[in-house]
Picture (cartoon, rainbow, N blue to C red):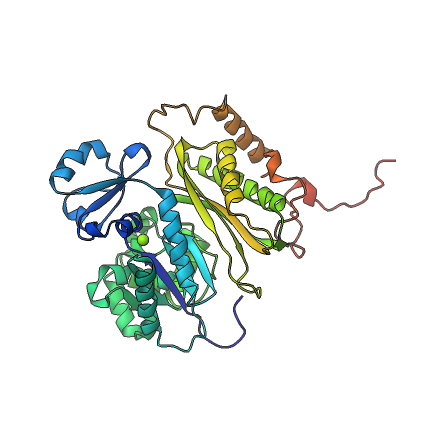
Length: 433
Ligand SMILES: [Mg+2]
């Protein structure tokens, strides 16, 4: 994607502040200054909250019944989650960003990466313009982080959010190395994209507690201790681009499966196969982590490189009860696809995202038996995963995924997969007389 000119790459990350709560506020301007929480399906626990809530001693993931009385006394207004509404605003948000560059990667429901490489603008001022336009057009408050790599843009966004002097826009590209290093020395290492709490603990034992230390760490040593992913992070912190749009660790609390098509796809049946594939793939990955999904999100889009107006609808629906069943999830994903599909579009990409993941253990009782309405669903999924683990991904799958999968990625130049039977080189075919 990147052009061959010598521009230094520039990425921006736009992130909505308290997304779910801001969407609720969009329709209730009277609550602009009221603390808000949003609750998970069946009003189980707090999954989103506005800034003021932390000060009130209410924490994320806390069961609502534990804090309800105290919260109401403090004037907190609670909403049940409305994923359809949030997805709608998410679309408006991404759509607005596309006014500023066609190269927008929707990373999660409330985060988009923008590729601003080669733009002859004052980047910080451009960031402010993006922020103001999104606020004006969608009412959503956002922060913008700008840097020469995605990892830096993500970090800049964190800074923009936390340090008030930046007023919501932080541009690392306009700061000197000394300024940046001073800033990095004051940021805990777990704030870096892809450095989880577990890595952070191990890094701390090696004396790497802040971002500056990680930036200055020897990439080779980091690779030996932690692997190539963290090595790449160190290089990205130093301004070396390793992640392009569409690359990077997946957002937390979500599982996404998406891919560009090998050739443009126009028909509904081909899209249905692709969406089925991604639904199955995402569900399997979710089961591996022993999680259940509360909502399903589907998107389809044409290419920013085609000479056609951008078309990229997405929809989200909340499930009646959390589930990890491929059949249920595929059913919902296909239903969403049907509602979005428009003929005459040259689709370039499609994907399925499973959202609001919760631990499989301790699920609330599902009064209407939704999750268990498919007989032996649990055993079926275990068998499905078992077969695919033993014989390779996709060995057993739903028929709706299709057999030929003509929409798959172009991989004509891929080396044979020597580790699978199908990829074994054939030495002679006349062995059997
Ligand atoms: Mg956000």
